[in-house]
Image (cartoon, rainbow, N blue to C red):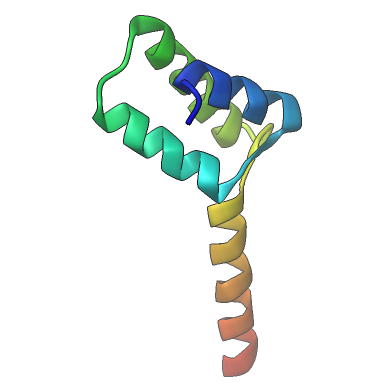
Length: 73
């Protein structure tokens, strides 16, 4: 498992946060983090909100929701 800073760096470089990386971030955040970790995580959150980084988990959720809505139509 990498550090929060490393996971964020990879997500920012690839413009994508995998479900596995998101899971690792949750575990690392639960175990405590440094100021650098907090800053990196905050930057990642902003990049996600601004659309610069996509989240695999949200993409999956959106696809599932769209399929369910298509069935209802």
